[in-house]
Image 1 (cartoon, rainbow, N blue to C red):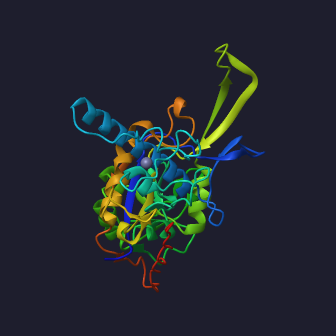
Image 2 (image 1 turned 120 degrees about the vertical axis):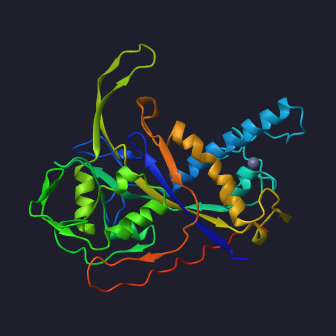
Image 3 (image 1 turned 30 degrees about the vertical axis):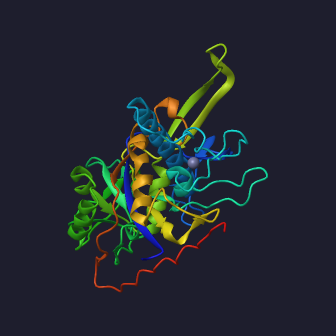
Length: 349
Ligand SMILES: [Zn+2]
């Protein structure tokens, strides 16, 4: 059996999502979100995803354990939450580190005080990238994408080179994307792109309003159309606004469609303290456990400002890609998709 399997996930922002850089920037906004250092397109780092998934999976198995206990069933002694969630650095309430723990095997555990090495975990998370980004136009909202973004869902699009917006058909009149006015060109394979998005459970009202732009314009338009909100820090003791506490923060807008991958390693290739892993038996199992976080993501969300109604992310698609399709928007070259390298295998034997 292969050493790992990749599972493509597609999610829809139900609220604005703010995953911050943790530091303030001097400029337009006080609290900025994380951007890809190369493309400058905002993203959710894989490390943030891993942390949130871990917490929610631990909550799920703790709820399940409590339920089984109420039903008089035999249950594990060690609670999953909060012990197996978090960074596990607390000496007394740290990760359980057991080969039968679905949280510690899937997400790994830290090296505890006076204990042997940690374990990296069987699930790895890529960054979540913007696949479709809602922008206002005079024809109503359109969902913007680019060849680079579509590569994440296995589509190879070429011929999108000009400073233009590519739709199903070309048009005489230019179209505004936010404040930017662009000529309209036709992308002959828009139907194939829409079909692929349909396979990935992207809702029809979004699929029908897809607009393609070149990669360089994509970053520019996304960054010009982020949600920026202004808020005030509240003093928890007085319940009143703090003096000089007005701050602004940016977020991916509601309606943004994100794509990420869960890379599930094969448990058979690992041991924990010389014992085989029993919580999961194959990569599909690893993904199945990680997936338990999805209903929590939809209600509890990801990122900061949760108390201000931010962060809910509905997972639309949680299965592996069926096949990879190649699409060309014009008679042009196509480049081969590069296979990701096999992830390093780690074990603490
Ligand atoms: Zn555990």
